Amino acid sequence: MTIDRLVIWMVLLSGVVFLVRSLSAKPPQWGWSIVSGAILAITGTLLAIASVELAAWIGGMLWGIFLLFPVLGLRRVNDLFREERYQAASRLAVAIAILHPADGWPDRVGVLQALAVAKGGDIEKGRSLLQIYQTPKTVLGRSAIVLEYWMRGAWDELLNWLRSRPEREQDANLMLYYLRCLGETGQVNEMLRMFPSVDEHLRRIGDLDRLSQARLFVLAFCGETQQVYRLFEGELSKYSVSNQQFWLATSQMAMGRTRQAQQMLGALQKDCDPVLRRAIAWRLNQTQLDFKTHFSDYSARVLSALKLQLSQEARYSGRVAGKRAIATWGLIGLNATVFLLELRLGGSENLWVLYRLGALVPEEVWAGEWWRVVTATFLHFGISHLAMNMFGLYILGQFVESRIGMQRFLVTYFASGVGSMAFISLLALRGGETQFVVGASGAVMGLIGAVAAIFWQGWRQEKAQIAKDRLRSILFVIAIQAAFDLSIPEICFLCHASGAVLGFITANLLLWRKS
Image 1: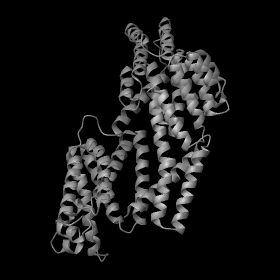
Image 2: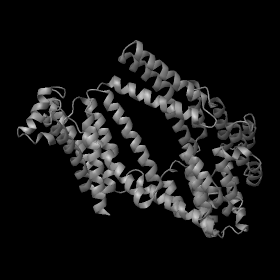
Image 3: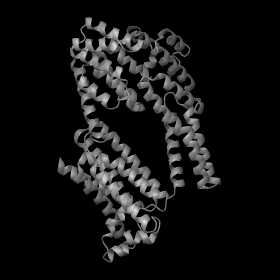
């Protein structure tokens, strides 16, 4: 396997994903569609009429400049927006707009600059800058209208405007602010009645940022302070400190701890920007109302379902906090040490060196050198082979080890790696082709199978929606990996496939015993 082929796969696969997602968006993002389609066309044409190396070089360069950089920049702009660093966000958005002048990016720069002006103290000038972009006909235009109401803290007026807009049923930003308006005006039961449909829509379009914000509004206005803390420790950690304090005080007030909330808001009001100061003034005026809402039965069920969902996501997302992946790092260190030994003895691409260190040769295994099924899993052919396997081990190993424990993790890893090598040896005994196999790929694929087993158990036993969704994603990754393996002769497809199956079976048995 060469770097050129890897780049080609990366460009083609990500280009197709971009093309499909941009065309299926509502409204379609024609700029991203044109860019990704052009990169696919250029790369495919070069593959057909020129060489793999040239296609990889030009396609990879275009992919990096016109897809990767704008996407990473967009992610950073969103982070800066949540941190309320609007001026820095607008400067970065200018660079993105140069490379991607479609899909309303130049106008987004203007909106961010208006927010920066308002945060700096001149709300009226910020409002006037927003008026340039305000129109109910576009997504950005409607967002500019909403932000103008937000600057003034006019939640009653914004609620009336949102109720008059039929686009609210499809516009994710309008949905989000509609939830907040209901909470701000004390209509908490109505907010909870609307939340399931908002949650479903945001999940369907994959807008997880707005989904996290919608959850924040619901949990804060329902007085779930502990859950609000968890959001700020996780997906909303980029929120500014002042914003976090504001929403924590809101949840305290909803719990009935009015005096404590007033103290927090009063201290915050002395040193914050004018927009937040108006939001605090609105919140303090709400103490004259009955902020503690009596939930209907339906509202209580929605809130309970949301808290259960958050609990399940904590179990099936990322590494478990506080658990160190000792075995994962130990295996990475052991593989790296063996690779250095390969280099010292003559090179990692020297077949004689690999043979002496224990590469898998089925004939030798059946002649009595059974230890090769173990040693072969720690040998790698070239730095790129090692880097890809160790990256996979780093990503997957931490998750699996934190979920099933160190001992079960090691059993799964070696059962997959050694088992896949034994499977190749068995096939050779039955008349298959002579093989010379090295690498931890079978073990790493076994970890993918283990991840699938974890999600399978979560879906089967707990009916966790996130486990079901992530199981689908893992199956998609396995399908892509299989296509990748079959397209490159140097890769042992059967090693990967047998490793994934063994990992799934082993982890399922271990999880069954654990339960």
